[in-house]
Amino acid sequence: MQNSGLTLGLRHSAALLGTFALMACSAAPTSEEGVGTTEMTQQSAATVRRPCEGLEVRDPDRCPQDEGPREGTLSYYDHRCTSATDSRTPGCVNAIQQLCKEKGFVGGISQQAHGNGIAIGCFAQGKSEELLVSFDELKKRNSACSGPGRAQTDVCTSAAQNACGARGYGGAIVQRETPFSLGVACFHTADYIGVELSELRVLHSGCNSISASQTPECVAAAQLACGKRGFGGGIPQQVGATGFGIACFNPGTYFAADVR
Image 1 (cartoon, rainbow, N blue to C red):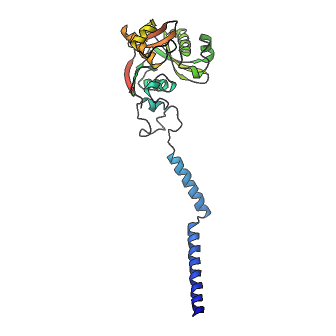
Image 2: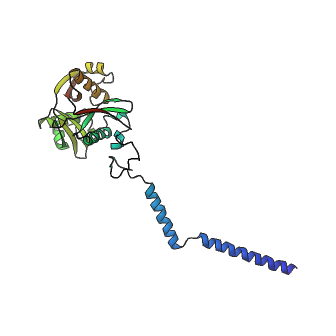
Image 3: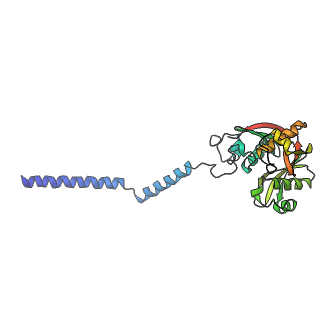
């Protein structure tokens, strides 16, 4: 009886070992299966990666409409534009230019910023031109405009206006930057006025410093100052001891756009 039990036990153990071996063989992939699994994993990762990932400017051919920012919003055109308070930063300035271009204009500028929206004036057809102006030229017109990091400052705005003035235009706005130049929209002004900071502060309390000419607050105040004089848009150009030189213009179109 003991021998019989031992024999049965050995047979049972052998059967279990055979089952485990079969399971192990089934679980272990062949070399071809291993390669296939790796490829599937890589394909899955590629599928998950968003087609717009890493793009500074949205490319409609690569970016589905149902992904990311809503179509028509400023963050749709440049992901760096995330808030109305960023209206005078490179990301929002670039987005505004792209949106105005889509509407058939050379470019445009933020005028007022509230909540999630920015009011935009696009430059009228036939009264504006986009130029690439090298830093070599810009530095000759204002030595402090020395690189792309200063694009949206008073010194580069001053240099850009001087460059546009040499080409027969009264006003300018920097719309984009490259390592060696700035993309500038030159436009014909309806008027060019000198406005004291004290007046601008009354129009917008946030415009309270002579060094703040290119901030959203002072741009908004400049537009209101031009509005008082019968014009639709305005942008500070030059900085004086107690006020700004402001280019007033009449936009080709004026509208509000959501940021996000």
